[in-house]
Image 1 (cartoon, helix red, strand yellow):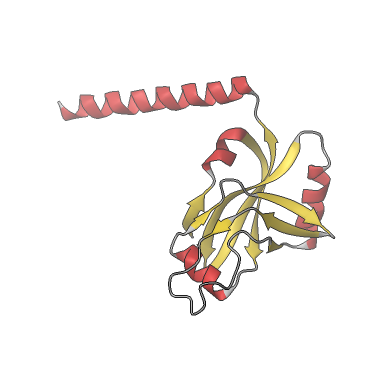
Image 2 (cartoon, one colour):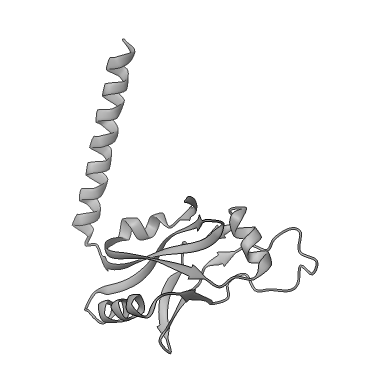
Length: 151
């Protein structure tokens, strides 16, 4: 499994309750662009319409080798492919107060582009501060260990 892009903001702003892998319906030029790494999940989110999951707001840059560069929309809504049981679990979880569905990363699995999404709950400000503090202390410890091993 090769990770193509990660939504770092989602990992920082939300705590993940459950994760799911979903297929994503893409056009040919979108697949080539995604595999080249020209995708952004920064402002994207998942919505459920008519018992189907949709990725909204993901930006996939147009592929340079397109025959007609004017064709295609970079930020169109893209359908996600999930099993019925997973979709039902997401709908139940979304109805809970404070829960949402966020895209975590886009990766390839056996040459198929997949989207990892998470049922998530927003973090409070003090949780974010705690996460930053833990990250900083971990970085300091690793730096000290590296410096100690060099001498």
